[in-house]
Image (cartoon, one colour):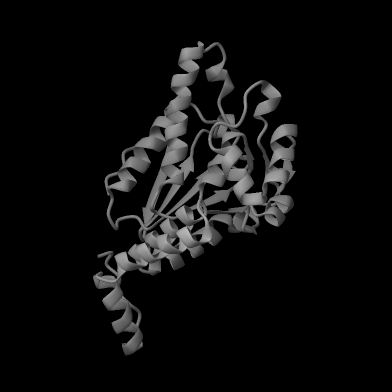
Length: 264
């Protein structure tokens, strides 16, 4: 896969696992226009990468912040039109992650405020460090969550709790994030990426088409009633029946060996 050198992102591809690092540590990896453009470009390339990438890990540079949210020094003084145009870039970046067929694990190395928390919620699941703090603080500065937070946070932790957090703009701890379902696991800082990579290797070792179809069924099924969700599941299942990976998986099971999945 051809990955360019981005101004605001670090990338490292190994064993079909791509580690993407939000790389503006001097300002707590705050989201600016260029980062939005870089993320959108990267996820566009991932959509066309075939089987070159099976899992993405999204993390931040440094040990203070995963992402502190929007870069308001850049945004200060923007006209209404320029603000809306910039936000459209951000919207596309968040949607690219949410809609990705490739599993995305957030490795939350520090605080995740505003858009930073929305990145965590856009991922399929997340691991975080004990000192991380989380918040959607937008209403305290005259805006509101606009990277999906009013939709993704209630789906993760429930509507009533999400309303309290969004309307008060109060931060919450990593322990609360774990209890409420924002984080799947808390890891010591030295173990965070290792833990995320260990999980990513397990996922990458499974049949990639199966992983993608299962993710699609879960994601789409959560938006509808149970019976419609079951139909979505069967449609996704039937896509896998004619694949070579399905045949290889069964052969390997019968022959008591590890399958060699090719993504076809």
